[in-house]
Length: 136
Image 1: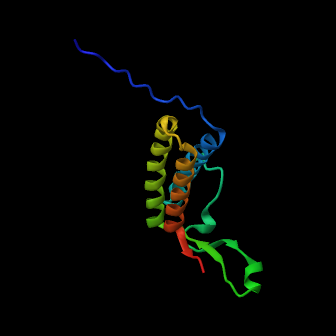
Image 2: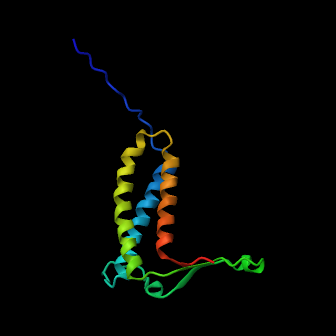
């Protein structure tokens, strides 16, 4: 006589930090795609912001003047050219799929907040690697 064993998956409730981290990743992915589409020359009617100041020319988005007085030059300059726009489009479209899949997958993981945080850091690092022109 065959016996069946029922495996129960733990039904962890969503914690607010995990949901917020995944929503930030989802929103950032949509913004990456929007910036990439504008940088590739397509000007959609739904573009609610202008990225023309950073397309094909460098723009400084972070300048820490207080550190310059200490002798440390920390300027983050980004540039969005067609190649970086292509990679932003690629990263953004893949990360949308990953973020949507993660909402269901991370429910059964005990350390889901940590995984969501590491994913968000990985996503930010990938984007900064693609668009950073000058960091120091």
